[in-house]
Amino acid sequence: MLYFEKYQGTGNDFIIINGLDCNITYPNQLAISICDRHYGVGADGLMIVKEKDQNLYMDFYNADGTIAPMCGNGIRCFAKYLYQHELVKDDKFIISTLAGLMKVELIKNDHDIEEVKINMGHPSVISVNQEITVLDQVLKMSVLTMGTLHGVIFLESLDDYPLSKYAPLIEQHEMFPNRINVNFCEVVNESTLKVITYERGVGFTKSCGTGSSAVAVISKMVNHTDNKVNVFVSGGKLTIEQINQNVYLLGPSEFICCGYYREGGKNETI
Image 1 (tube, rainbow, N blue to C red):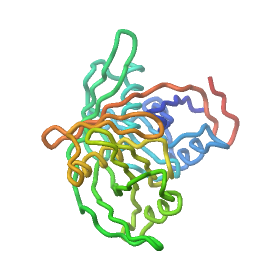
Image 2: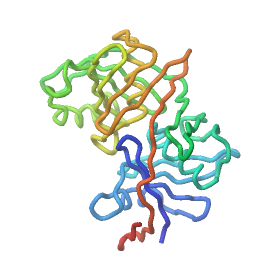
Image 3: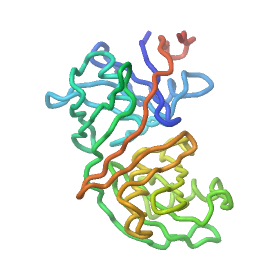
Image 4: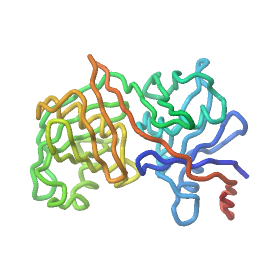
């Protein structure tokens, strides 16, 4: 039986397990089973607390068992978990990820952690407005690494485009042998963006922190939007700010439930 806690950040939900207290032999298989929304607890991803080079390490797995180097919504939930369990004491600390060391700041009110701010580091832009052919469409997509690989496509209206038709095909396009996260964006004004993300290994999610950060970076280059923008996703609002060469992600994280999971058996949630 594994003790777990479940959190969400703007609708992106995650299961967190303290790997310092238990030995998980097959984390990929565990991610597939525990993240299943019918036969498991259900989540977009699994995070396991570990230690690496004297820092706490976020070992992250998508719902399909694949490893993700970084997750913007996930790391906010992970940061809150660490603080709530007194694994860290300060409001500012560092979390180790496959994408590098991430600086975290907890924004607190009198009673609780209100939001979590992450220094997402430096984006690495690979291409801007590169043409990609999908079925009967030639789309312009910018590609960059924001902890993990993202594609950004701007549309006049998110409501008028058949996203479900094209998103899976773009994710698995031959140009990207390891697949890619796909972000569709509608620019509302200079400080407001609307984003829908199809995440690699998950599908459409209510929010994606690294994806929203990637969109803000490309939108500033292509659409001359502000350094600081509000990004509205179906799960809520994120704030992305670019200062010098760093990208900062600000958003909420909330505890949902806790319980014990027996793989292949019944789950008891509280």
